Amino acid sequence: MLTLNFIARKDYFKLLGLGLLFILFQGCKVYEDPISVADAAKSEKKSYLKITMLNGDKYIYDAIESIGDDYYGVYYKEGEKLKTLLKTTDIKDVQYHNEKASAGNNVLGIGIGVLSLAAGILMF
Image 1 (cartoon, rainbow, N blue to C red):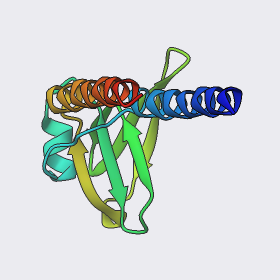
Image 2: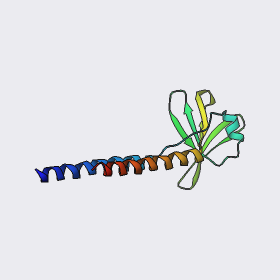
Image 3: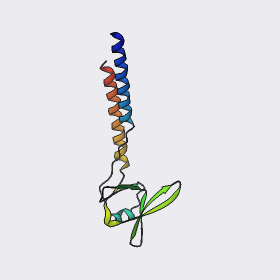
Image 4: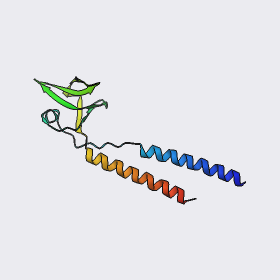
């Protein structure tokens, strides 16, 4: 009977550890309030942008450029600068990534994960 409890306890710790790893490596991104496409194109911010379309699709770009009356989402792939034409009539939101708030949430998440592990260990 003692062996069964020991095995069950080991399995419990494995599950607890797996759950903790899931929590620790989960990233949380926080975005700023929505702005217009024109404001994003004029902005000099170095943070990336999330564009949400009316159909719910989400795209991440490094910047937005304005060429004439057209707007392009700019991203880099394998060191090459690529552009995607954006249909402004299909765009719901344009938001900059808030790096400070995202970092704070990640630190908070790791702290909660560590405290959860400590509480789990102290329970036995």
